[in-house]
Amino acid sequence: FRRCGNTWLEGMHLQTDEDPYPYGFGLAVSLSDDGTIALIGAPFAKVGDNQKQGAAYFFPIETSPCPENSIYLPLILR
Image (cartoon, rainbow, N blue to C red):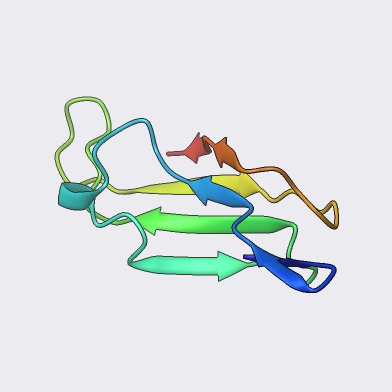
């Protein structure tokens, strides 16, 4: 959520292109000091043929004061 004037707006959805639930997406979350980068872990993600290898999802965060609703897909760090 982000404040825009006197209103709180839901600005973006951070999601993967895979079903996040069996992979533990969101069990670890970190934001950069300035709030422009989110790193979200999925410790049980399948990578290639490797079950439960894990992945980290890198999301650049929109910093404009009043963003439109958006869906951001990650750059996957494996």
